Amino acid sequence: MTNTFQLHIKPLNQLAVPLIANLIFGLSIELINQAMVGHLSVSAYASVGAVGNFLYTIAGIVGAIAITFNIYGSKAMGEHRQDKYLNCLSSSLILDLLLGLSFGVLCFLCKDPLLRTIYGFSGSALRNGTTYLSLMSGYLFLQLVIFTLTNCLKIKKRTQWILIVSTTTTLLHTGLNYMLIFGKFGFPRLGVSGAALSSTVTLCLDVLIYAFILRKDIQLALAMHPNKVLFIAGKSLPLMGQELLQGSLFVIALNAMLAHLSPLVLSGYLLVGQFLQIGLIPAFMYSSALLTLVSESHGSGHATDLVDYPKVAAVLTMALFALAGFLFYEFRVPLAGLITNNQNLVNYASSIFLVLWLANLFNPLFEIFKAAMQSVRRSTYVLIITFIIHAAALILMLILTFEFQLGIYGIATSLMIDYLAIFVSLNVSYLKVVQHIEEVRMNG
Image (cartoon, rainbow, N blue to C red):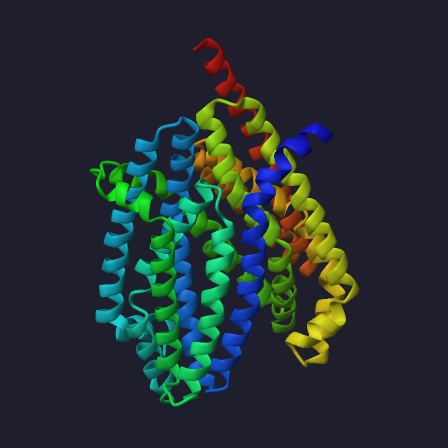
């Protein structure tokens, strides 16, 4: 096991550590940006937050294109097929253009009915929302291109550039927000428009810098005929379904049950959930690293690496998750007090912290083996098994929470069983897939 760690920990950390640092830094700056908008008015904060979450959710779902590019681009590099990698890149960029511009035009033309129908906005909230959405209509296109280009850097093992570029432009974003929102240093006070312009300028700058770093790859890719557009689009559909199921439908159903218990229970869960998201950052980043390393190992036929990379990533992720849990638990009361001044909410969130953290104990392992399975082209299986187990878990939640009146403890128990069942299913299936890959290689 020691030799396995020494051999695999460096490439994993080379990809994951810059991504972890980048995400933590980005979350900190995002809190500052939200505070700036919050100083404008309640309606401005609500409308910008709602539109921002809407755009972020859509980008997360459609961003599966970049994950597909990562999987098949990394596999091509493992096969030493530069032409296949470049073809995947050119096809992904075409998809980014088509989907991004189509969505942008739709948002710009239908912004008013969209916000009225989805969020029920009216008055100042509607005016702020339509202003923000109009200026952010190019968000999806820019974000999809950024996803694709940053996945290029992951495939090339150059993730340090992601940390450098995003750190620089995020600081610029914060400065632009301050100047444009509040009209500082001779700039006009633009309010919500300033927040949108700041975000758009920052995204454009990100695209330009990443394009310059990867200019050789982009030039070679654009010179090729993009004949994998339909292939990448088709392979992205299960990943989009997974994101929609896990990131939207399951969360909505879970929050609905919590809301039926009481506003305090829902608020306490959401407050603890903010700390959970920080604790799960290593899981998401090591999963991202696995998409590259496992796909590459799949292409090169290294069956040992296919087994060892997820194993090492799982150990690292669980160690960091446990460390974060210990630190957050020790300081749970003052940390909760930083988020809210409602003492009842602070006390309640502190009392259920350990229960909810343990409920998510197998969540990091689920993320690791989900990425591993997706890397060996088993995305459809992941979607099916996740849907079945999530549905069963929701039924169990209803029974334990309301029939047996266990409240939050019924939800926590169901969550632990849910993540454990998915992890075990994916782990067992992944080992069978690796065994099959090795048998094919030996017989071939």
